[in-house]
Figure 1 (cartoon, rainbow, N blue to C red):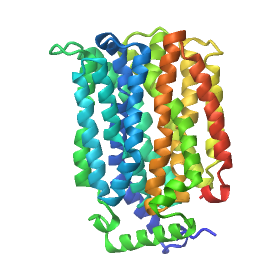
Figure 2 (figure 1 turned 180 degrees about the vertical axis):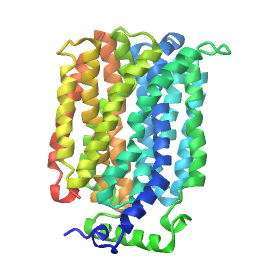
Figure 3 (figure 1 turned 180 degrees about the horizontal axis):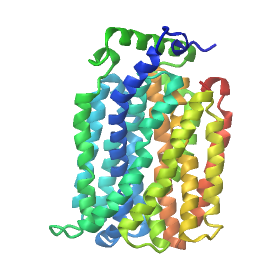
Figure 4 (figure 1 turned 120 degrees about the vertical axis):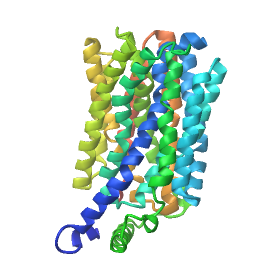
Length: 435
C-alpha cells in the first residue's frame, strides 16, 4: 500500500502541491542551468573539432581517443566524489565541481599539442565527476519518489537545451570570433563557454540550502509538512540505506547497463553529430549548429512528455522500453535508408527523442530502492559504469570514421546495445521500481 501525504493532506487548497511548487522554483532552475553549462563544456569539443584537428595535427581516431579520455577521469573519480558530497556539504561540493571544471575547460583554449589535449580532457572528467549523481542525490532529499520523474525532467532538460542553444551558440562563436586577437575560433569557444560554469558555481553557494532546515524561505509549517511527506515515502520504499549496500545491490549494476545503452547513443550525437552533418554537405559552422538543435528539441519535448506520463501512471519500465525500441529502429535505419541530409536528420531526431527522452524516468529508478548514503553510492556507481560508454562511443566512431569513412557499423552496435537495455529494464522487478 502506498502512503501519500499528498493524498491525505489538509482540506482546502492543496498545501503539499503548493509546497513542492515552491521547492521546484527555488531549487530546480539553478541546477538546470548548471547542467546546461556542464554539458556545453563537455561536448563543445565536437564543434571545436571542425577546425581544431588541423591546428593540433589530430586524426579522427586520435580525436575520438582524446574526447573519450574525459570519461576515464570521470569514471575513476565519480564514486569518490559522491562519497565526499554525502559526507560533506552538498552545496559546497557541487560548487567546487562547477568551478573546477569551468577553469579546466577555459584552459583548453591554450592547448597546443595532442598530448595537452589528452591531459585536459582527462582533467575535465576529473573536475566534473560526481556532479550529475550528486545533484540527483540532492534532489531525492527534497522530493518524494512519485514526484521525481517530473522533477528530474525539469533538471535534465539542461541536457537537450544545451544542444538547442549551445549548438547555434558554438557555431556563432566559431565563425564570429575566429582570429579575433589572433586566436582561432575554437579557442574562443573553450574560453567563453567556460565562464557560465564558474559563475553558476559561485551562485550555488548563495542560492542552494543544504537541507530543508537550512532553507530560509521555508516556514515552520512547510518544513514539518516536507518532513512528513518524505518520511512516508521512505517508509514505502523499504530501501537499502548504507553506502556499501548501494554498491553491492545487483539492481544498481543493471541500472549501469541500462544507462550504458543510453549514453552510447547520447554521446554519439553530442560529440559527432556536427561531423555527421558536415559530411552530409553542410560546411558553415553556424548552420551546423542550427541543425544540431533539431534532434535536441525533439529530445526536450520527449523528456517532458514521457516523464509526466510515467509519474501519472506510476509506471517506469514500459516508459523506457518502448522509447528504446523506437530509438533502436531509428538508429539502425540511418545506414540502411538513404534519405539525404533532411531524412537523416529526421531519423537522428527520432532516435534522440526515444533515447534521451527516457533519461528522467531512468534516473527516478535508483531512489525507488535506495535511500540515504546508499542512494549516493547507487547513483555514483550506475553513472560510473554507464560513462564507460563515453570512451567506447567516441573510440568506436573514431575508428569507424578513420578506417571506413562512415559510422555505419558503430550505429548498428549502438542499436544492439539499446536492445540489451530493453532486456535489462524488463528484468527489473515491477513491484519495486513502479513507484
